[in-house]
Image (cartoon, rainbow, N blue to C red; front, side):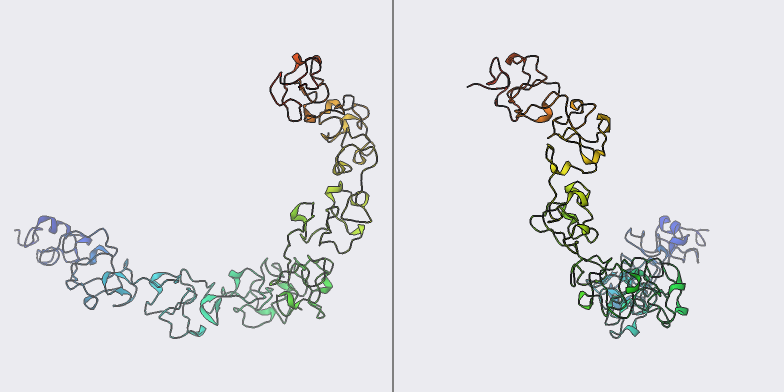
Length: 494
């Protein structure tokens, strides 16, 4: 009974016969009572399938030498490339007929793709397709011509769509978009005719607006294809949404206007050398060409570092947006040195027409006589109190409740409770003139000594009242009692 259909018949073991009855047993189990071939296969032929085997388990030890499967097939008795029967198993490293890319020195693997290859290793030298945009030339490509490219969408390729896509005509290993292309680079050569992008899309059959399939947000049409020029679909009949100069300057056929947020079609190139005018109203450059125009993209500007002597925030200098005044040095964003040019003057208080020196807009006008706080605090937009005279920013409001700020250098020492409730420019309790310690320490709840004047927090002028004797600015550098005088805790003795 065991000679016909028994798993143990004519076999070497019941283990081999048992696993030869399913899909993993080599595909020949159950014929004439054999398991595998003549009962010699366990799980698929010569013993169990190795963990490194990447192809179908059914082809392991099936009588054919399968190569490129991560482990040696027991059918490959010679172990060399010329004896490989199958080189393109599913799960293997090669996709074409033998020899494909099988490594002749190790037929379980494939030759690695050369350094610089960015696409799938399967694609390199697969014997089928010339893959382009992969960093280096595919050896399947007969030449360097764009017309030879067959696949520009291989995983890892820089191409955006079917060939020719965005593959560079002069170098099919890389991609490029036209210099004047202003839309998302992923749109060029993606299979759709994109319009209003500053240059004709390779996907467009011609230059007419009728050919347009898409006019996205990054185009001058901003999703409205009706704005595309009927005879030149690279441009719009109106300025792009990001054009910042006068609309009449855009594509006027007269001059190349630069720094206007978008490329002017009148410019022969995108470089600053093409510019005719760089300081039109609305341009990011307030100076004549080359001004601040970006050397390689003349629609925008390059921000320079601030010069020595600049006292305003460094990011404000030459930012292309506002003329900053009162900054010690003239801002390159200022077209002239006239007061009317000034847009920002935060170091002068914020109200340029009142606070900036009209004779020298790099300086602030000094505050009126009697102002005891910093010049920057005067008329800075916040009602500063305790500064000797009313702040213009208080707009005539005199009460303590109207105050917005209490400058430390003022009579209050930064303490709102020191301000006169009815006259906020004054103090009802002021920091003494001779006070040498931190002004905020006066009347803060701690008796500070050696500060040139008696602290209001001290119960008496005697040394025994002192809580702190070694503040910065104190005449004593040691902890209490330090060198504080016994009967005069504002001063020190030897």
